[in-house]
Image (cartoon, rainbow, N blue to C red; front, side, top):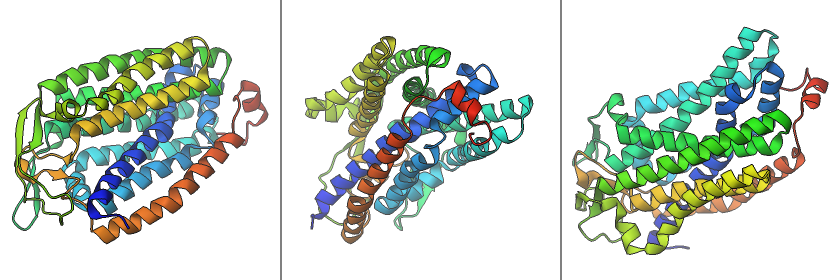
Length: 378
């Protein structure tokens, strides 16, 4: 059995892996749907694009659901505070996500141009909005969230929806959106051929370059922000005590971990370099390798944010001492241990099943295939 301190760190890593898995797997679905109205110039082309992800989009939702469940079970105080503070933002994500299952299922049931065009934009909306909002949420973590706890650990949120949309948070939202468009574009380029592939490569290269520019810009901006630093000693093996620490805000505080552990710079380097490698690989037609390099770039971007915030999960701008960290916002030792057993059992099953599903449905989706299966495909 692992000790409490080790489990706290392990669950920070596990939640990070689930978020990365979501961004890579469900993220490429979102990227494909975001590109749908722009790459597909007619109904047949758009059906072709949709059917590149048609067999897998529902299964990829597992990463999103599992990440949410892990957040609830491992960090219950974070879950409760975030879902209260970001309530309207999360409702916007939920409303947008409604368009995805309905759009996939009903788009092609009526052979009407206006009907199908409306659902194409619905799929765009249901994919682009969540991609932006997830990035905006991460941006607000760096700025600090306006919440605090009283002596009974009752949280109070003093912000509103519009305060979430600060310039820095919107920049982070654009980083997230361009990253997922890059991920989706590489997958689309790998599963298609001809003019669709050419357009996908063109849009993906543009997205990769934009992501690098925005990511680097956000990195320089973070260095000017007031970051949060633990000013008191915490016993990582102790029972959670949210108000039992002292947190101070200082210029450049979010760069502390990179200064202390220079090896951590490998992650922002991966985010930048692998995105550029993705663009170069697409240029020479190496689409599968490009998808792998794009996935590594996604890992680099998300890990960069996670390492900068560590050990904070949800910093408080109202009362810094109320900030939630991996040390004091977790479940009990027993709960974390039971959940670890579940992860060890079920995550490999998910990986094996996903690998099998993608191997079965590998290959190009062509216009001829769409015509031959006109009544059975999306």
